[in-house]
Amino acid sequence: MREGNGVFVDMSFRTIFWVVWNATLALIPVAAGYALRIVLDRKPVRAMGWLLVVVLGLIWFIFLPNTCYLLTEWRHYMDTVDSQNLYLRAKSDSVLFIKLTLGTIFYFLYSLFGMAAFALAIRPVERAAVRRNISVRLWALPFFAAVALGVYLGLVLRFNSWDVLENPARVWSAAVEVAGRPKLAAFIVAFGGFLWVAYAALDIWIDGFKQRLTAGKSDA
Image (cartoon, rainbow, N blue to C red; front, top):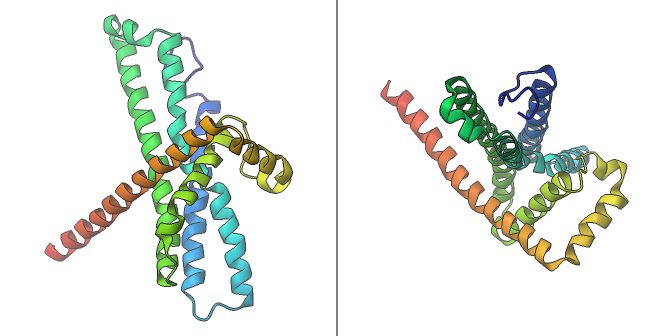
């Protein structure tokens, strides 16, 4: 990462802590999404069940941006490569070349983990909505734009997920301000469109992977 005497892959306790912390935040909406699906699949859903749906739904939606947020961690990679001139130095330093390669692989897998969590968090909720005849396509772009907005609030304005509960007025004010900045709003909507396409691709890939596993078991 960015600490260490020119060392690209820093395995300090601080670095490991933040990697594990960010990964944990990304897994929360996955757990909430599957729990939400289990509750909604129960028939009938009683009053306490609907209360649980609201609580789980809030947790799911509030923490969901933490998944695709991991895509933005590449900024540390680019900052480090640029500030320490790692690309040119690695050409004549075999040890640094290996560290640079490992760092590149790490950020790729880190981003892939975040996007996998993103897809796995949405899939159970989407399936539950479809079973209840809710047209998810009508809500797709606003939904993914809202997730993109959450990434912006966390990345640029440094809000945390729990600020939605602790400082709702500040979060709401910051979100409303985006509407007054057309270029920023357009960028956020475009990023939301990208997330929509990425989710659709990952959703198809996960279905294909599951079918492949099922076919493999059948052949065995």
